[in-house]
Every structure is written in C-alpha cells, then in structure tokens.
Length: 285
Image (tube, rainbow, N blue to C red; front, side):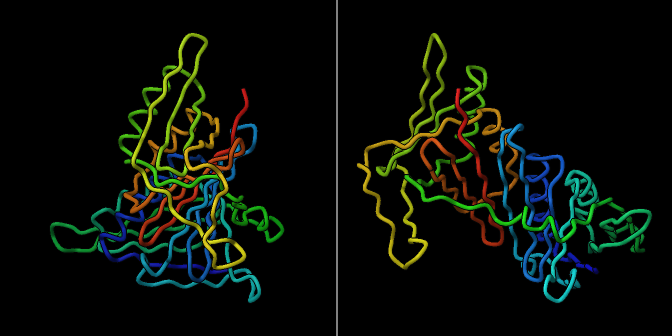
C-alpha cells in the first residue's frame, strides 16, 4: 500500500486544519479512510460511551494539488488507518504559513503518516520539518465496521438556528441537567427543554425552515402525514450535544437537524467541499 499527497494552497492548508480540529474535539482516536476521490474521518463510539457516530467526508481534489493512492488491492483500492487526530492537528498547526505540506504513508519502526512541512525563513532558504504520526492499518475484515451508518426515515427535518446562539443556550443548560429534549415540527419551530424535579426550562426558536427530502426509492419529495404543528422529540445527552457544538471549527453553509422520534437526532453540516454527519442516539432516564 502506498499513499502520498501534497497541500500547497495556504487556504486549503488552513481549512484542512480546521476540519482536523473539529474531529479532535470529538474523539481521541478515529479511522481515516482514504480512497481515490475522498478522505473520510469516521468515529464510532461504543454504546457505553454514548454511541454517537461521526461521518465526515471531503473531496480530495478540493484540497490536494498532488494525490497518489495505491490501496490494498485492485478490488479494494482503499486504505483504512486508525489515528490519533490530535497528533495530526499538532503537526498541521506547524504549517499554517508553510509553502507546502506533504503527507505520505511510511513504515519506520511502525506504520506512520509522515508530514513534511516546508516553512519560509527570513533568509529565503528552505526549512523542512518532519512529523511522524503512528497509525494502525486496519485489516480488510474490519472495513465493513466502518461503512456509512444507516440513516432512518425522519419524522421532521429543520434548518437549525445560528450555531453561536445554539451553543450559548446549550452551555447555560448544562448547569441545570444532564439531558436535553430537542424537538421540532414541520412549521419551522424548534425547542430545547431541560427538566428537573423543581423546574423546567425551555428555549424556543421560530421562523426556521423545513428542508424537503427526496424519497430513497424515487424522485418524489417525501411528505409527512404529521400535523405540521406536532413536535417530534428526542432526549439526548446534554454534554455530548454541547461537546459537538463547541467542537465545530467549520463555517458550514447549512446545518440541518433530522429527528427520528425517540430514536436519534441526525445533524448534517454542509459545506462546499466537506460534509459532516453526526448521529446522536436517544437516551432514556
């Protein structure tokens, strides 16, 4: 297996770094799936730790000026690596003003992602810094564990309010409860509610929009039989929800929250060159 790529554009280097910073805020280890067309960062938490899942994908040609992949085999032309994203972030942060950054899969004492960072100097001479990031290469038999998570049919989909406003509300609620009931309807309304033995606190968001989704098996737009004013709700871990919102280093063009009542919320962040899905299961009290 061989892999190498090169980042040259300073905007791409900084944007790629922000993506890794987001992943770092969400996990200690993740799986990096490398294909001919895309990079994937995949987080699958065990049920014991909340069971949240993250599926982040980016088109490699939007970031890399050079890109070469020779995967496991002709039929499985991919590479799966388990990696500590914080180590990758630290290496990338040294290259925020770099002329270029080369990334390649190497075998030294252990398999590694090696980053070569070409830094500018006051004398104009080249200064290259090398970072070796240990990785674990996943065997083919484990690849199926990291397929894209199934997305159920949604009861309600809604475009979320400004993330900064949402973060402020959620951070204040953390001092009240460990859980939050997130709900929305097809009439552009969303609410967050925390409950204790002595009080209930609810924040309402109005005048939001409800995106339309095509049916999985046809080109028809899905229509819900629910009363537009009826709320679908999911109780989730408040600290996990806050961790996700506070960890975002991206500036997405749209953020959609999909509700599968009493099962999960699915948050979809859309950007020109990256898509991030966050699957958060319901919790019972």
